[in-house]
Amino acid sequence: MNNDKIIYEYHDVNASDTLESFTNEKLDTIFTYYDFVHRADVFFKTENTSSDETGKMCGIRLSAPGPRLFSESSHNTFQDAVQETVNELKRQLKKRKEQMKTY
Image (tube, rainbow, N blue to C red):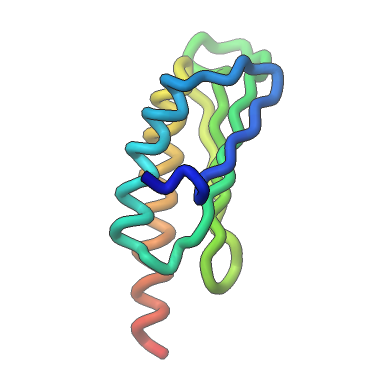
C-alpha cells in the first residue's frame, strides 16, 4: 500500500480510517496502472448545500509529470464523492498517458 504517497487533509470533517482505507483502495489502481503518478493529495470537506445529494466533498490532486491533475466532486456520501473523483482522474490520466506516448 502506498500510504507515503497519499496525504489526507480534512476541513470541518473528522478524520476517518474507514474513509482513508476506501480511498486508498480506489487510488491504488491509479498508482498501479499509472506508474508516473508519484503522489496524491486528498481533501475532504463538507459544504452547506440546498440538496441532499451533495455536501460531502472530495478533491484529489495528483502529482505527475506535466500540469497537476485535479478533480473534485460533491455527493451525499464521501464514498460516492471519492468514487466519482477517482473516475474523473482516471479519464484525465488516460488522456495524459496517450499524450505522453506521442512524444
